Picture 1 (cartoon, one colour):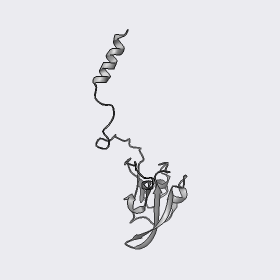
Picture 2: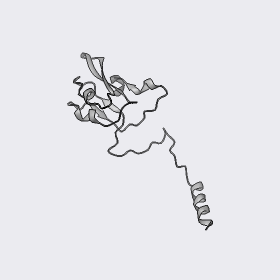
Picture 3: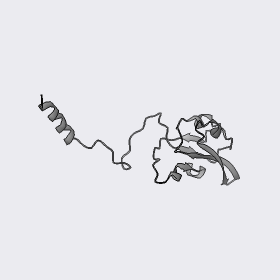
Picture 4: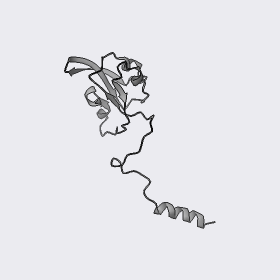
Length: 120
């Protein structure tokens, strides 16, 4: 009666670590995982559909200098984002997508606000 729990504890104590050595080791994500946004600035047509559909009003349209002059493009606040992918679904040119990247930890809250240049 006492032996089985002691054997179980010994097995767990002698087994390897149960956590990952992040960031060297990363957890595998599923196919339907939605991570950090990626923006193709060349195909964005500044339609603001992503900003209008966002349920948390996470996306603000900001002016950006590009090769073709000034354009209005999405700036995303990852701290407020639900990662619902509505912005990806509504984008007519498919320039805004959600990647599998989940590296969003920051030391400063301002790091969560991603300008269009940072979403590459």
